View (tube, rainbow, N blue to C red):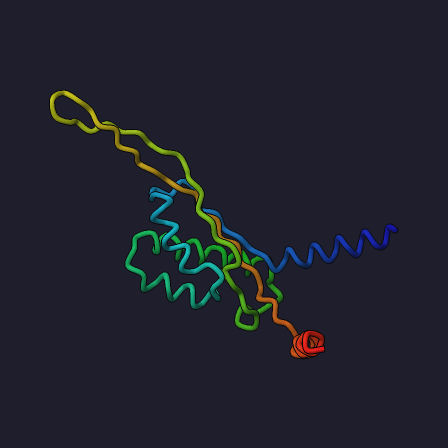
Length: 147
């Protein structure tokens, strides 16, 4: 039983090597605006995601581009023996959470004051290697469904 646990632990460790992530905290952009850009690159291959972010006009795209480059660098640190050009990296998960909201006061007519909410967010990007199925297994699945 000890050998089985050791093998399971080694496979989990090997699977974790394929995953890299980067976190951006307290980004001074509203989460709603950041999610618009994050939805563009979810599930996309890394080089294509960088191109999308480079040519997106929104200000949130610049911050996500830097975060994606950081995640790629983190993946390279974990996998020094692999070449990034040989592996297909994808943005497997990207999510935007609400951060702290700064409350400010703006003067309003007749002695009143309006509250301004300056929102911030936390962004997490998770990169993973693309799981490519063998053609044989795909053909077997097709044959099994046909029968």
